[in-house]
Image (cartoon, rainbow, N blue to C red; front, side):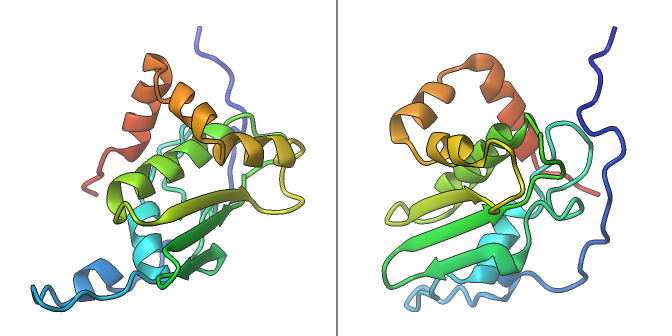
Length: 158
């Protein structure tokens, strides 16, 4: 018997049609473009939701406006909005965001992942969990969780 869905009927939003920041960057070997909000969004927008075959952009879990970047200070903050107040998959979504940015951004960046204020009943606990190096490292040692993360992060060709 298949497990019941936590959010069986999420609201699905249309993706924005625009050229990605990653495609716009001039790859001149002598010039390094600063990392900006659009580039970070391009890295995370296609992460798939752990429960539905939809992207985090389509569910409006992540938006461009909820990303802060300070390239000079090597700092990125992504604030995500769970689809439900009691979403038990929020830590998994946050971990997907962290892993994707760890793999995509230069190692000099400190990445801060946050749940949007007031959108999750366990917001403080999830924020603490997602930004604690030891907890993140322990989570990434769990083979089952790692399989879920890899599935969410796998590229889609639609």
